[in-house]
Length: 27
Image: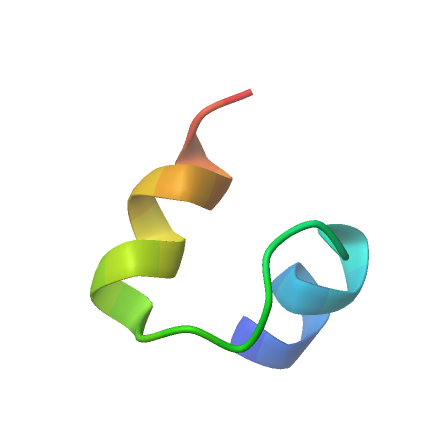
């Protein structure tokens, strides 16, 4: 699932889930 989210959000690099989750959750 994380890989899919990262693909949809190329702006966010492979960072820790703690940092990616809040960033992806926001529009």
